[in-house]
Length: 137
Image 1 (cartoon, rainbow, N blue to C red):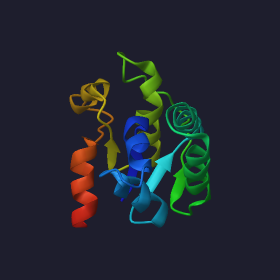
Image 2 (image 1 turned 180 degrees about the horizontal axis):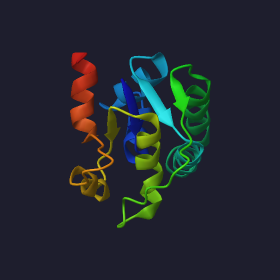
Image 3 (image 1 turned 30 degrees about the vertical axis):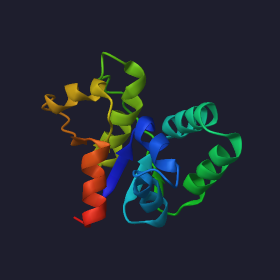
Image 4 (image 1 turned 180 degrees about the vertical axis):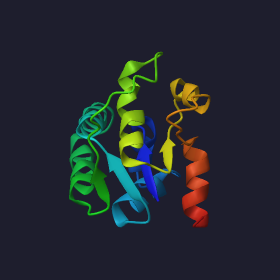
């Protein structure tokens, strides 16, 4: 299963005591393939450093960079699908380039993609994705 995870979801999944920690843990351990682009990786790093302590941010980034189950997909096309927040396009563009099964986010800006007929993306919440990976579906 190939998945793109928005920064808001990845951030809450880093903490080992978070109920969403399986999202992070299962990404780096290969229960699913996390798809990222360079711009996603840079945003993760920026937000991690800003929102959590530096040591934890460094450990999380090292885990992502060194995991053999995290794959880089740098899009050659910018689809410009998210008019409300163009900075979020990096996630939809990566999901399209990777032919991802899911784009996981709790950001309502991505809701527009649910009505976009082409390219079709499966947008799901962190809660729904957590259910999928815990149940093994």
